[in-house]
Amino acid sequence: MAEAQPIWTRRQRGTRGPAPGHTRAEIVAAAIAIADAEGLPAVSMRAVATKLDTAAGALYRYLSSRDDLLDLMTDHAVGELRPYPPPDGDWLDQLSALANKQLDLHRRHPWLADLVQRPTAVGPQALSWFDHCLGVLAPTKAPTATRFEAIAVMTGLVVLFSRSAANAQQQAFTTLDPARHPHLVAALAEPGPPPRGDLFDRALRGVLTGLLTG
Image (tube, rainbow, N blue to C red; front, side, top):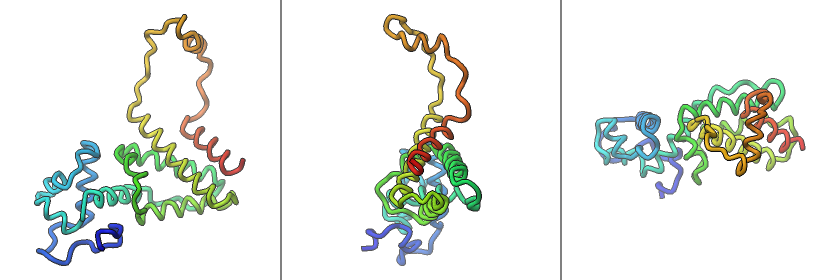
């Protein structure tokens, strides 16, 4: 059945009905604009149709369901990671640069963290991203399974830090009781020098080095 095929392998629109009033790319762009402004729950076929000044039913000439729309949104966002820098230099430096680019993408589109790990077919842009990361990791000589794990862990760290940044508020420990919280009181009394470098980059490099060269 056509509906069982990934959205990327299907026609841009159905063969029946009136001439198309919008492209699939326009539909996806409208959905992303809604998600960026109002969050993922606000994205519905009706909301997208309203933004495009058309009827919700008209969108079903291009998509079978909201899941199709979410798949297209995810892959379109991953496409924003292009162009990839050419493979050059130390693999860890290259992967760190790619991860920071991925983190910037997730901060631009906070809703993406809820979509990247959905159990769905991998789109063409995501496949290209994964392929490029594997190329960067080739010099490590790590087994294929380990390189796959490293890329998955990198994305997991990106999701974690993008969500932390979205809720970044300094916690004020204003109700500490020395009797109940002795370690917190002692730590805050002698904080010591701040850590060197960016936490995301330090965590990423530490985890990847342990996975791929340990």
